[in-house]
Length: 167
Image (cartoon, rainbow, N blue to C red; front, side):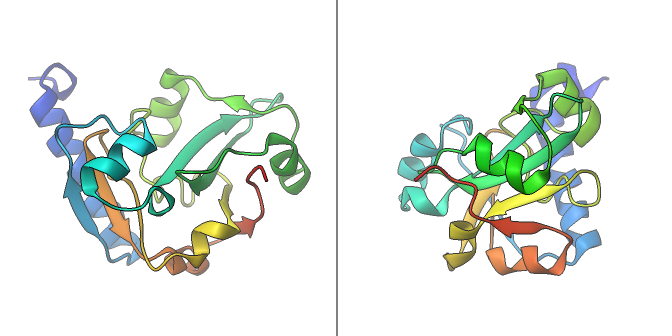
C-alpha cells in the first residue's frame, strides 16, 4: 500500500522521518499534535496551541532566479523581506518553491516542512528574532503536527542567522 494514498500512514511516516532527523542531528524536541488545525497558517496554530504567535515559526522554501533553493525561517508574526534575503544570500529574485520541488528536494509537503529538514541540503537563513525565543514551534512533517524545540540548536549547524524580516 502506498503511503501517499493513506493519509494516516503518510502522517506517521513523515513524523517518524522527522524523529529520525532529530536523532541524527542530535536535536531534542517534542512533537505536538494539533489535528483540528491546518499548519499552513501560523495564527491558527498559535490559537489552537494557546501560545503567542511569535513562538510559531514559518519555514519557507524559496527558489532563486537561477533555480537555487534556500530555506528562510521567520516568526509567525513576521513577513520575509525578500530584498534582505537577496543581499545576504547573494542570490536574486526569490519566489516560493513549487509543491513538487519542495517534496522532491526536501522530502516533505508544503505546510509540513520541519525547520530542520533542510539542514545539510540547502542554505538556511534564520531571522535573528527567532533566536530570542525560549522555545519555538515549527512543523514536524505534516500540517497537523508541530516540532517544539529551543532555537539555539540552530547555532550547531552551518546556518546564517540575520535580520531577514520586514520591519
